[in-house]
Amino acid sequence: MISAQAWSDAQRLWDFQQMHHEPRPCSVGIGLGSHDLGVADVTVDLYQRGMFPLIVFTGATSRTTRARMPKGEAEHYRERALELGVPDSALLVEPKATNTGENIRFSRALLAERGVDVSSVLLVSKPYEERRAYATARELWPEVEFVSASAPMSLSEYVDSIGDARLVLDMLVGAQQRLLIYPEDGFMIRQEVPGQVAAAYERLRAAGFTSRVVGGR
Image 1: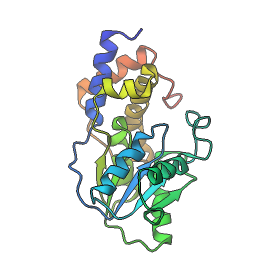
Image 2: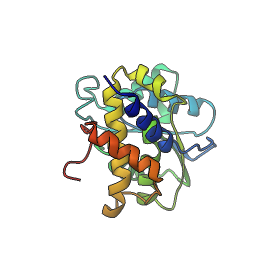
Image 3: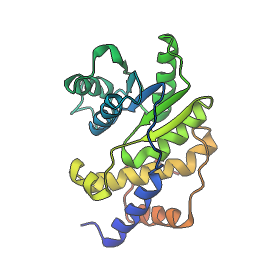
């Protein structure tokens, strides 16, 4: 059973992760691979609204996707996009990335290899990883302008869609930890973290929502 305090703290982390960017036309859309096919759906919706002419789906597999996405996250996203009517000519697949940094670096390399001129990217992630994805992209591809996007869902709606509340709270804690520690490693730009957000994160860690934290930190 998840306590009321834990839900309140999770809501605070969820709200902090939202960048509140208004989607606008960009050179390309990049959908970051994960267990959540909703990322593919949002990317397709933005493509169909004319926000970009080309989609890159990026991602191999992880411990949470190996069983359900055996072909790799990016390939399953591509199949979803084709089902939703996106032409194959508008899709690129980057199948090797195993973390957010690799998502950005490998997608950048693929686009350069294909001769695509990129000045702006609409970056599509899970709702609770908007800020983490944005901070990573800004560090690794600083000359490009990034706009963050995700499914417009509440925390409770997202938990219902995933069907595993504890997993979502663990993921929230993991995303927040990386915002705190990765800037010193050069993996992302530093983000100012309000005291109430930091306190909520510490309470959730103390309550045991730690399956997605980086060990020893």
